[in-house]
Image (tube, rainbow, N blue to C red; front, side, top):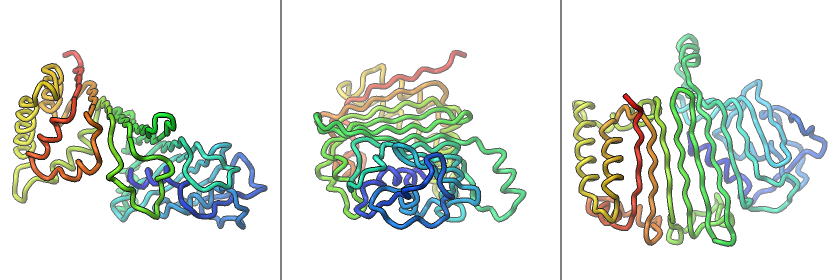
Length: 311
């Protein structure tokens, strides 16, 4: 689901003709499902949306041309019968709609409001009950490129009244808007992470999204609760064994308390990751055993805090 949303951030990088209806109203264009007008050489929201086959319009979908981008309402992201999500409103901003240039802008952001899980269960009553029980999410994805520092800054947040708040930001080296292109695989040898920060204030986000994924790793005929408990114990032991150069006693205590509270952590976790030197993307591909992980952790400084609610 997030992969499909993130793909929208790369729309303007595709080397294809993008068009805009010269007489289209600024407030609201035709529904997403209508055919695009004849090409004029400029950017057009209908053409941009057609680049994302995972996004489907509903009968009441609308498409709006903004001064700096596009917005669509009532969309469906479909990755199969049981991988289906609905979005109340999706906006992509940071685009010069009057430009004929091909390539990604220096900054771009995407906002998905009212994101809800909507699998095709094949039963109208079950589908309705699932719909009314949904707690929708809001997703924000953005990047901006600092040309002077040659750094790409990425930001992502996921928020929901019933789920809590999650955010992550990263500084990337060796990658610029000029490298964004669907027709070529990026040269990961040049890409490195200079820093990463994440924050989590959990309500039901862990329970709804992380626990099912972890529990699904339980061996056949195994006990998920014991499997998770053993995993927690092993992770806490590993955290406790981290060298002080990687994490201070305070940070190790914070991380251990957070893991100990799984699967129901409450409070706010802040985690900063500072690799020295910057962590190459190729290094992450080599994480295939515990020793390689320990070697990697030796190059990273972790700073964590975990504020648990009183009582």
